[in-house]
Image (cartoon, rainbow, N blue to C red):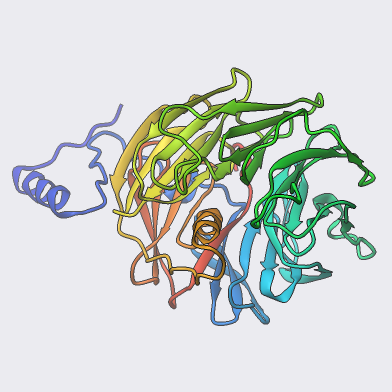
Length: 424
């Protein structure tokens, strides 16, 4: 192996640099490490949102591939589809869903690039709010009437395709949630209409034609908020514990463990899942993060603290990342839930959301918001710096800083698009 030897002055300079730099980048005396530009997939993209436009950037080269001008609705929330190709824009106050095509298509063994654009597909539904996706199927819950919108991602580029809206009898407007399981059935929240307030108490299965299977397995709780799905299993957060459904038609309740209880902020009201992980992670606003195992029906605390700002899986589900108010980032194994690394990283502030509903519901809804300043690919974490003209790149597993991307102008927020191919 080729080795490099440093003279004493050079070594002293290296040590001074290492102690003054805040990115904790290791100095390698042996062979040079592989550059970030060679390690990140050429098919990964960052969608930079700024001044009424979306700019598509290839992070491993820093090249700006496309700029799409068009109206961006204030308060819209953006979610990346399973394939990485599309962004769903949920424009709640406008009663509208729109879809942005990044132009990066995964052909399994290779990628294909087409023009980035807003699709002509537009869905109008009353107060579209909660987003869930699994195995290429997107479900949006519409708070205005308790209906759901189902989007088959594989059909979005077909000009004649229109997503389906399923409206249900014997339901009312509420802040609910729903998703699709791999057996083709949906799991959707319903209210006990005798109970006051805006959150639901039950979960019911709905078949592929929108027919409600009117049996909730005997599980009824004081309130439900938040959900996540991995295809085989799905979970809903509730005041009484976590409601678990599966593709065999079962609905069960994992009761709260010690510390979790129905009082405001002390139950798992926000959940995350990934198709490649059997585990789910749930957040209680005052108590931190808990891992949920739907197979063993257990809940365990993995981070205790009432300061979580955002959390997310890496794009392949291998890692789970938690961002806290002191700008500390923690990486957990997405398969086992064990903590792997932590470090403090300076990043742009996340703006506070306006308070519109009851304080309890506002807090729960705020916890669902995707982070506008931190996104993941398979192996790398992209962090928008406080000046918003730089993006720090960290290796997710170790949280080592490996690169800084310089931007030509400040950006408001960013999303991840594209995908990774092994060896690409």
